[in-house]
Image (cartoon, rainbow, N blue to C red; front, side, top):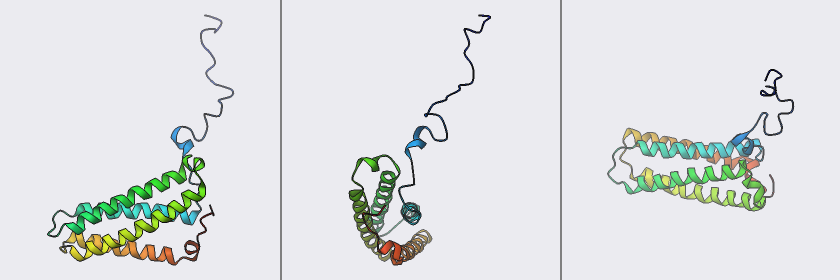
Length: 165
């Protein structure tokens, strides 16, 4: 034991590829597949749908709750679908499926979710009781509509080529 046979060296000379800057779950997550403007749009879409869901959850009482419940369902679905698409873009799942199908699915999911979200917003605004929480939710809806209108008016987003990364 005096010759050091029991204990090995404490520093490895070649740590191997598993160690380094990114390991574990972070090694599988990459935002590099989306360009900056599309990445910002996807993150904004995710955050605004979550914000809409949280604002709806703040409403404690309602007289005509059908519009509120429909808006709750749509905003939660929009958040989950946005999260799903972002996960597909940022993980190795993207490499396993056809890129054109992912992008066309993203386009149609975003379009469908936006149309249903607009319908749910109109129903919610027309049936709410004008409590402060509901007024705050409708103000956030107005902000969301303005952001989305600006995004769709952007020539970069208007002429999105589905085969483009």
